[in-house]
Image (cartoon, rainbow, N blue to C red; front, side, top):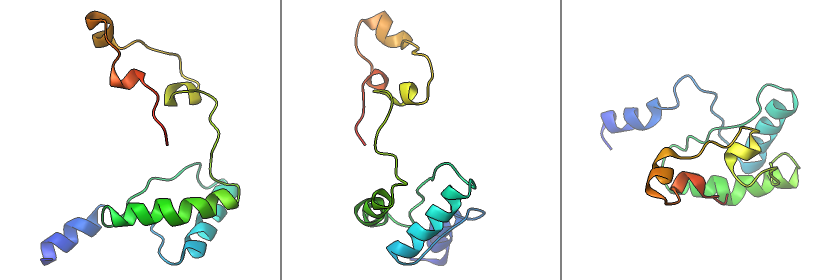
Length: 108
């Protein structure tokens, strides 16, 4: 990689709390932040894709679930319902009498 490419890859995490280490180290940090009320969620900003995201999903999520701090049950069938927001019909799907992608449930 060129210096510019390296900069572009790492610059997106500038100003954010970054954690590196073993699965246990990262899970400890996330658990501490979560349980102390310092955060209520996380955004994944893997330094490279897809392996960085795949490692997160395959290794860290099971550890967070084991610790009981990963949300596995949702109140609603959609993100909108789970956040307690009222349903708003998609104008385009109503006009075209079709189901829009935003109206369908996604699995996580």
